[in-house]
Length: 208
Image (cartoon, rainbow, N blue to C red):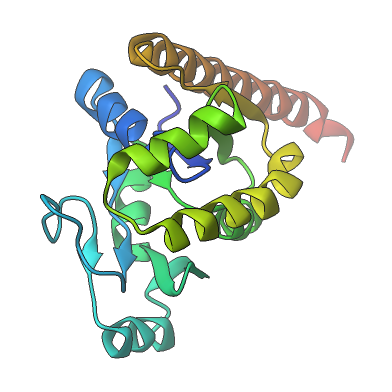
């Protein structure tokens, strides 16, 4: 594994299961999960500092002013952001860091960290996606429709992701193993590329 660590961005439609997949990867492979900050209210069973850091809008805007986020975006009436300090310290320690963020934020992360791996998690079909949102029972029909409209917007940017992974019902293990294989192969590819470039530079330095 690259000593510098790996940054993995996982995005996906609301209801595709990206949160479940991200936490399962952490449990199985020991990856580090960056916990996002948000201004939305906790859902039933969610705890501050576990699923999200729940903040008031005023506190969130203060962190923006202090450059405390790698990226932030407004999504369905609320802010979401990735705290900078945790990510950079984990990367420096050589860890694989997973960012579970929206499409807007993913593009901002890629600008700052060109080696970041971008993965998009999707459900097998639009019908399954909507059924999962409705089945949560945590959101009103109006919010479900808002999330589906948002998914339509996000679909325009799917081609900007290097990998698209389908999270099918009852096949979480298969989804996780696919993502783990991607991370391992990408880390090897980038490390070999850097080693090759360095060997070329060393071999040619006498000609400078």
